[in-house]
Amino acid sequence: MRKTLIFLLILIGSLSLRGQDSILNPAGAESPNIKSRNKKDKAEKALEINPLAPSKAAFYSAVLPGLGQVYNKRYWKIPLVWGAIGTGTYAYLYNDDLYDRFRDAFKRRRAGFTDDEFWDLNTTDGVIPTSPNLSNEALQDAQERYQRDRDLALLITIGLYALNIIDANVDAHLKQYNVNEELSFRMQPYLEVNPITRDPHYGMAFHISF
Image 1 (cartoon, rainbow, N blue to C red):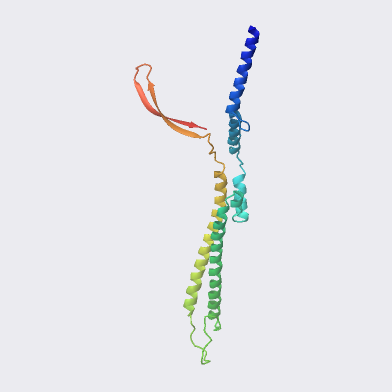
Image 2 (tube, rainbow, N blue to C red):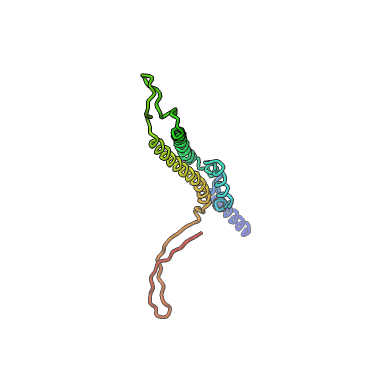
C-alpha cells in the first residue's frame, strides 16, 4: 500500500511539472535555451569580418563610380555620386569647348585672317567691317579665363571621383563594426575601505562589456 501511494505521488508530481512546462512553453513557442542560442548565433554572425570587403568596395568604385556603393548596399548614394561626377564632367567639357573656340580664333587672328566667328561678316549693306566684334586682347583674355575654369572643373571632378572611392572604402569598414547587444558601457559608484587605516575611499567605476 505504501509503495502504491509513493508511486501515485511521483506520478502526480511529474504530471504537474509537465503541465507547468506546457503552460510556460506552449506549442510552437521557443524555449529560453533556443532563444538564447539563436541570439548567440546572431551575435556571432554580426562579428564576422571580411577583411577584403573595403578593398573590393574601393576597387569597384574605381572601375565604375557608384559600383562600390552598390556593393555596400547603399543604393541611395548612387544618384549623388553620378550627379556630382556628371556635373563636374559637364563643366569641364563646356569650358573646354569655349576655350578651343577662342584659342582657334585668336591663332587665326594672329596669322592675319579675318574669317573667325568673332569677326562679324554679316552686315546689312554688304560692306566688310574693318574692326572685329572682339579684339585680339579680348580673345586672349577669354581663352585664358575658360582655360582656368576648365582646369578647375577637372580638379573638382577628380576630387569627386576620389571621394567616391574613399566613401565606398570607409563605408565598408564601418559596416563591420561590432554594434550588437552584447556591447555595454555603464558607470557605477564604489566605496573602498583601507584595510589598515579603515578610511573610506569613494570613486566611480567604469564597466565595459564586449
